[in-house]
Length: 353
Image 1 (cartoon, rainbow, N blue to C red):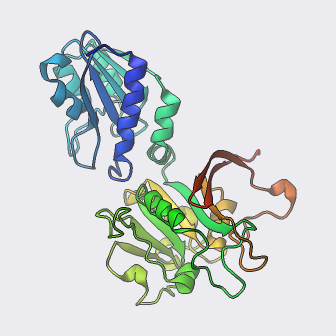
Image 2: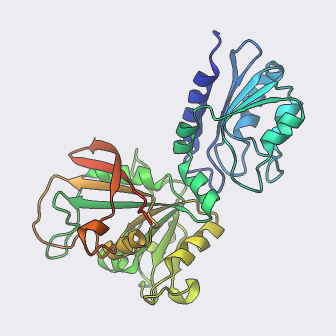
Image 3: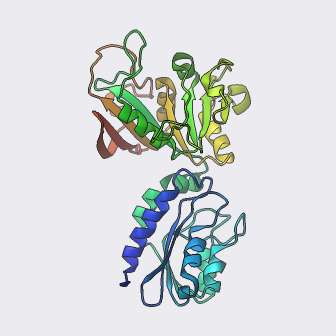
């Protein structure tokens, strides 16, 4: 096999890391490629699930003795602590690896320190190769670790004129089946799906993840969270059906904000304490507005159907905007056609001051 460059190996490691999206939390997604002394790929690995072997361990097992004097290319700094698995930094030293190339340092104070351990053992360590790409692929976990609450994605579906339902309240279905299946794929990458009690009362959603091949329930289901300040969720609501874990988050339990509703900052902190690193906010329009007004949305994913209603509920209500200068500006990072609909992905721009 021909030798590959470190840059090529890191690109492959980032691809491998993506395979763990949705199954590793509360751990990060990580990919690793091992090159022997001649630069040939002798091992590959990714972190597949929490509690399972880390990417470096999988790659080392494939490489065997050929790891000696080789190079480990890894998307995140190798861990330096013993948890459900041992420290990867020690495993790399024991394997005789001569060089470790890291895209992003580990911000987790419990696990960081791998680079220092490697250097102390005489291993050459290089940081920053394809760092922005590795950051992007692991953005939810990295963001959650750095600030102490989950990465929040607001997902909504609307007509081209911004309506989430018709004037009579009907909303089944605004978007196509292709878009709805795309949402299931999105749900599968997060740890929790959050809605307001108004959405539960109006639509009675299940908020589960279905297998895209046959429509059956996926093995892994995110936590279902209903923001319900006064505990109005019906006992027979579908979110209570046992298909996935459900938390009815009340103001009495979580704490109340200035408006008497559930304190959103406290809610996210509590979710982080439960190991939630990525949240999908699905509704309704007032809850989304509250999250946006508080600056708690990290990414917006909108599904726009080529339909017009002219009347009916808006997809977003009361986001703290009273004049055009207060508008929440977005940076569009992707536009993709999904069936007949458009999926627009955007990042809220940080406001000055």
